[in-house]
Amino acid sequence: MTSTDTTPSRRTLLKSLGLGSAGIAAAPLLASCTGADTSSSSSTSTSVGSNYSDPVPKKAFRAVVDAFEKKGSDKVKINTVGHNDFQNNINNYLQGHPNPVFTWFSGIRMKTYAKSGLTRPVDDVWDKIGDNFSSSIAKASTAEDGKKYLVPWVTYPWAVFYNKALFKQRGYEIPATWDEFVKLCKTMKKDGITPIAFGDKDLWPACGTFDYLNLRINGYDFHEKLMAHEESWNQKKVADVFDHWKEILPYHQHGSLGRLWQDAASTIGKKTSGMYVIGLDQIGAQITGDAAKDLDFFAFPTINEKYGQDAVEAPIDGFMLSKAGKGDDVAKKFLQYLGSGAAQQTYLGSNHADVATAKDADTAKYTPLQKKSAKFIADAKQLSQFLDRDSLPAFAADVMEPALQKFVGSGTFDMKSVEAQAKQKYGK
Image 1 (cartoon, rainbow, N blue to C red):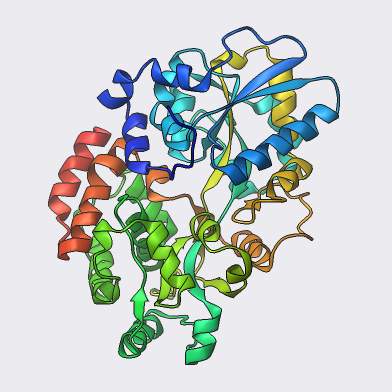
Image 2: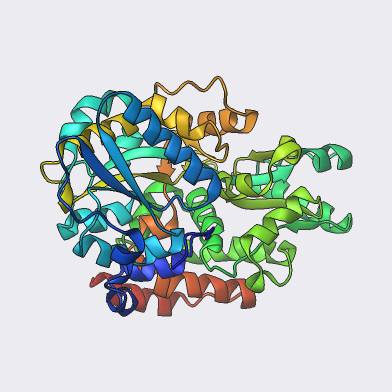
């Protein structure tokens, strides 16, 4: 078991969330990996299962715990596990001896475990921190039973990232509409630059492009209903999404199915690619130092004026309370602290690829890109999470991600097949 740097493999994560055989087979794995504190929490201590295994976030989260402990006599033990290992075995972890507090995600990932009975609501914590969050973040932290299960932590936007120096050098203008976007792709190709960086070896990155096309063409409400399978995948609105995508497929980076998103992101820094639909959390961790000064983004262009650029994709990470947290007052005190701007600022002091969710976070020390990201999210009329957070996990991992990869490789999306599989996964 390793706790070294691991990029999230959402495919395997979602398979485990789908309660698949892989997750069950690995039942004892996470408990041993975490070194989960199976002893009962004393009145002055608790523990947190953390997937912050990369050096930068691991150090940043340690600083958060240190700051909490300095506030009083309460202690928090951190059980850090490699990002992939933590996520791939979360189901078994929660059924074993979990830490009272654990890192997790909003959207259906949160709702899945809220519904399972393996976690506990944190409405009493929200009674103390609720005013510190926007209504959209509060909604994203609420499960189907109307109770809050997630304490929001950090977030980040997906957008079209580009290299400012390249745009200035070539005289490129930021495209606001689909026609302008396609025109810019043609110009870049003529200039010998790959218009759209793309790496889909991990399967999930293509979901971001699908989400934005659907949000811009059919609007947020349709997108959310499609994610919940309250709309059919076999209809013209879905066909329109892939017709638009086909228009720009020739401008995608060749060989994308065998390329990691990290490698695609690096081509933005090298100025060999012009644009990349990706999250700040991803590209912001790849292009750092002085090179980060040239990194910028713009909103995915308008396609349907009715919906404009209203919706922004902004996944929210947070913390949940496991069933082991029952009666753990220190765990709830720690969760309350995590919902403060002070805690989130401490974490972001050395991690510039995310932004705080708390309203009282002091953004004065944000980098320009963090400030722009925070405003971008705050100004959005609707916030989506991501296809694998907004839809049934097993559907995202087993159906959509392979289907999107096939589309990127062949230009073919089998709507009938996806609809048939959606009926099986959702049972409706």
